[in-house]
Image 1 (cartoon, one colour):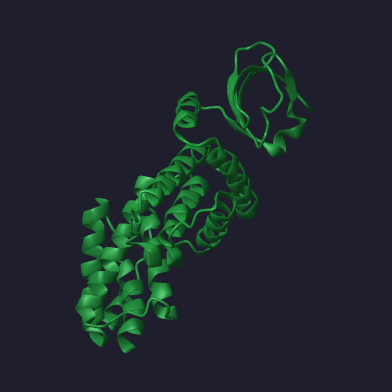
Image 2 (tube, one colour):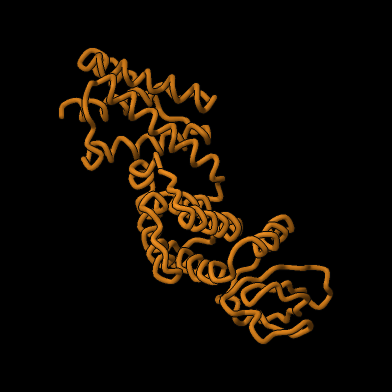
Length: 280
């Protein structure tokens, strides 16, 4: 059933402040060209809701209004297409904060580019491995931005965009996701130095280990219990003492960084992953 909304203010060609008939509920709606040719008091219906986004949270609305004063309207215009593309490709109901966070990030990235500054992404490989679907969508997004804004964002931006996409899909903060990426990178560096090997980031065993670490961290954060594997742990400890001891070192790092207990069974799974890597 369609619902009528009334325009209270036109923020720009791509964003309006609207209210329902009672004017008790105010929202910001964002959509490509949605404000073009419109004026205060005009009526719009929710029939075309699949072509625009709604910001209902008051804090997000305020942040978005502020953003419109600092980011070029051409960027805002392209970002509407970008976020629509992310929603379609991911099939997810995205957290509305992506409109502020990703638009602000891209605006800042383009400014840095114009100033000749390049910020390196230290977790690019880990991001690609941990979030392959988000990374693929991010590649498409960066290509869209480069094409429509005639810029050339560096490869590292794909990783940053992928994290924003993952954040919006899972409704977890960028801070938390960055912390977990940094933790995985720290654990991989510890594995490399302890086993005295150079890890091939394209190898299947590396991919398996990184994805296991990602899911392990998520399980630990959520307090999920994993069934103990005492008999298998005893066998692995005797057969592969180096990998078993390293597994416990990794567990101690995770416990310290996450400030949460790690199930003992994690040592079994990590030992098996480490053994595969050490054989190479």
